[in-house]
Length: 452
Image 1 (cartoon, rainbow, N blue to C red):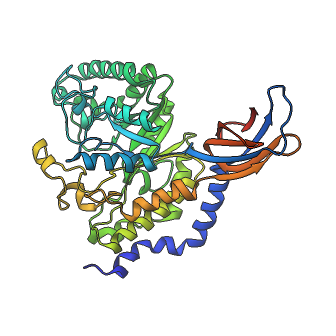
Image 2: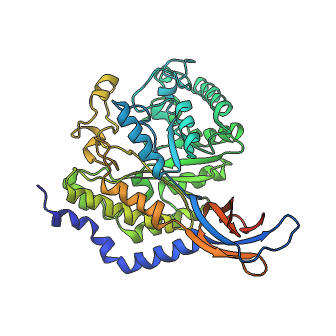
Image 3: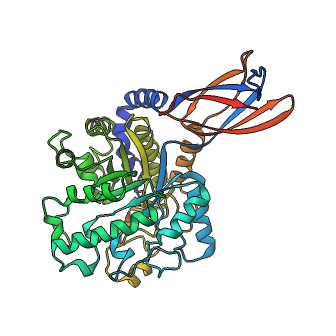
């Protein structure tokens, strides 16, 4: 059994920079995640209503907190499936939906968009995911529109022009079905693989072409780029870093990149965890990198987060929870971050690099293989919550949540300061309870006229 003192060393930079973190987080959250709401309550004739008792209760965040939804209706029992859905919808307001081309169209022109599509492990059909999101007020997020490593095998020997033609057909189909339902479209992902699957991958215009085509088919959507952890957080933190440079270069060539995705998978073997996290678990380094990428003038999205616990022992799970609390507080406090997406919600169902689908599915619960090794979920294999899940729920639903009581003055005006998001407003006038809804937003003047 591992000694707590050995693993707790992983937190040493948080402890050393504690005063810096506390000040930075408190100041950032207060300035960038909250705003002042002014309510003017009148009757239908425009007369002010004084002494109206108002309760303002936040229903959801403007900021997006999410996870991938790859295991929707994919678990072994209905009890587990329902527990998964409840755990997801109780905390998150965003879901990453898999649009991997090799799973959506394993055979040319035989697509898997609809709910009744043939099941593929960890790849629920988009329509199923969209339906769940709509039922629970969750914003869907598209993942991997033009991700070469997930291109279907039937394209492996195709020419560059053939691939472009098929990509355009794919874009058009997805846009027709989902452009009005999914705001964030992740266009390219992980362009730093040494070798691609198709001839198009090595072409100098891959990123530029994919984004310009996305602008054509998704003109009103938010187009995001995405890259792996090392390139985002472990480079030199200069404008000449690879990821920064290729974003800037493609923007200069006219690619409309609306958001910058930054993965954060701590996929380190336990024995090398400490040495491999001196940059990724260094708060000053994290702020420095976010500040650098903010110079590109685009919002940042923390797109794929995995924090290992390495076991279900209480000590290891507690360390995972503490790291998540620190990281989420840092990201949430930065002015330019707009989304944080955890990756796998449940332990035991992570990615396993095996080409045999049956072997992959048989790997469920085997914590020694693939990414299961890291125990990076927020729930255990039996769907019981780990401390990390409870900590996230506390942060999102309690600590970063506003619920307050106010009373209108003689002019019928009352105000409050709260986290940006949707609020239910309950107004008590002489014992009569009236319900309204407002949206407190960082992009609005937040002055609300409420007519009773």
